[in-house]
Length: 223
Image (cartoon, helix red, strand yellow):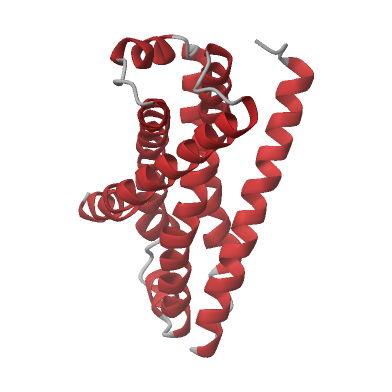
């Protein structure tokens, strides 16, 4: 339980501000780009597009990359060091499985943290978009328009987004344990393992997202 709470704190709480800042910057860029193209503030169509883009894509992808940069790097480095120093082998000799002892708490914490970060990104992105749009137009922020934007989000899209966030985090942790953090015999290999491992996990994220989006286009009619 202690390991689980520490990992939730590291992967979730300490990453929340970074995810919120990324969401605010991305949504602000969206608003400014839309104004530059259309010459007006956010319209209902633009709001729907931003909400869908966030709930079906960005709210999963951006926190996932931040998770890779922080948690995946730390996990690969930690497990690689344990492999070099023989700690993993010692655990096995003691009859303690490294996966349930070391990885399972991190997996559960990562899944929980990623679902929270998904919501943080989504809320921050929409609120920031309305705030920047009102600031640029020189009008007060309309809270009713913000609430309407959240009400237009389909519950199924929200549930699927939360599930995707948790699933990607779990897949990343299992990949790290099975592939990235094994077979290292010297300390110089640890830093290389962390850097290349993070890149590979990011590519796995991108591949999974491409497959998901392709399947959603194929089997789910656009709303």
